Length: 91
Image (cartoon, rainbow, N blue to C red; front, side, top):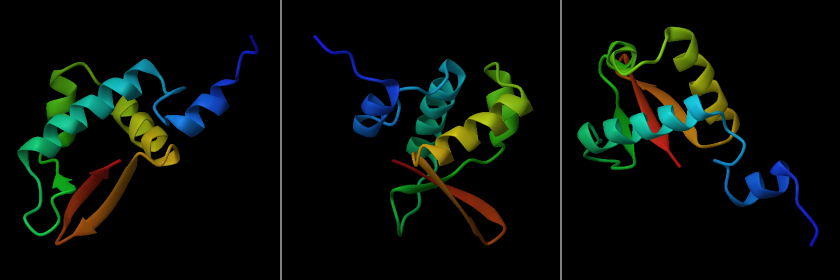
């Protein structure tokens, strides 16, 4: 049986190949989505006190920034600024 590369599987599922911390961050952001979604666009949500809350569950500021970048690069996360708030959309 021929084995496929990580890139092959990441094309099928973009979560493949992400670091464990980034996968944990993705799950943590999923919790935010369920708590603070937008009324006009339910796929978008805010994360009030994002860094403070994530630091309480074991993320450092550097890990948060790196994980956000990885999620954006994997096209799993979009960020918009609206009314001086950041809004997020997870894929």
